[in-house]
Length: 440
Image (cartoon, rainbow, N blue to C red; front, side):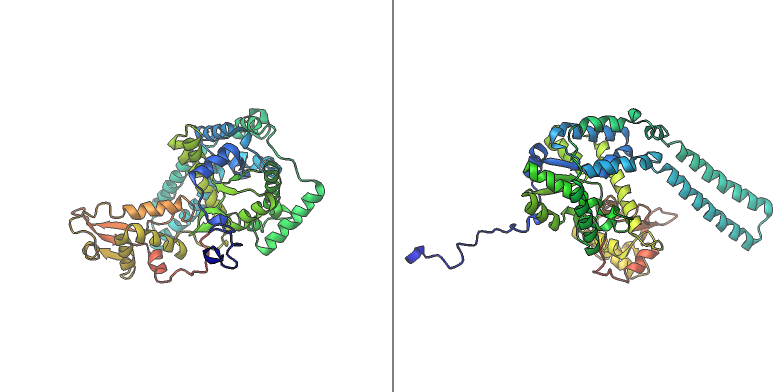
């Protein structure tokens, strides 16, 4: 057969790099454009409930985007059921004002106890001790009053009269004839059973809800099943929008979401022949601004991102053991140092060198390890703060974590004499992160 001979088995091989590994292909601009213009955009329950937590302008921006998507928006029956079930609780304290006041009261009691112990140790005069307690109480009361003034009591009325609720009014129009049906009773029971099995087997989606009671842990799978059924009927790609960043939905890289779980991508391809994409609400706003000619102010993106961060912190606290301390962890520190080594290597070396010297590095040592001799130390910590803020914005580091690298100044000259690490970070750098620990 000469040159026309075909190597045995080669003719049957028609697969490419991403065949069977579709989840690892980063979506292109065209992929997103296609799903936003001809696919199915599915909001998660938290997307609808967080509308109550946004600034009114940001809320209206997101609702405008959903309106502009028109018939591409589709809500599973499970999402709407969860929205109505959880809505009243959210309306009681949508911005966490009551919770903040409660936490502040606990801190006031702790601070009062510290002062009382110190007063007893010094046998301080009664009049002076009373003055300290009064000053503390006045400060806490002032802050508590300022917090209370931000409470949106109008929202509490929405729970008793949905006609007053601007969120319900807009969603009623957006979702008119765009909410899917409940599964038939037999299929619903099968879906609940399958969801509970997946929780036990740690299979996505929904196993992170395993601590919930009754059939509640199966809720995510019921939602997922409804998406599969609708996608199969429409034969179109799915864009799932969720504010959660949980490992039972997302493929995570150093705790950051990079795409849907490969198992979910494969399952939707097998059951409906459709592609699956996932984004968070701020990304949906950004994409809509770029591709659908919808005006999305930077303030709206920032506010939606803020609520996402707070939600992620709540989720992280729910996952933590009750006695787990907040602040820096070995895994979070390892993630920041990894990024610093790529973008600001001298700062990474400075942190590592400081950890070897009881948490402090002098200005002379900073220059010795490679910082340009002609450069001022003003702004030396800026890339550190930027990268820490990046991870805080994605809920990987608590907002109240101590600054990773702080300048130490000379009192007389005002010049930086070096940089200091928190004691907790110094200790952690002596105990490398366990590679088996998941950052999420």
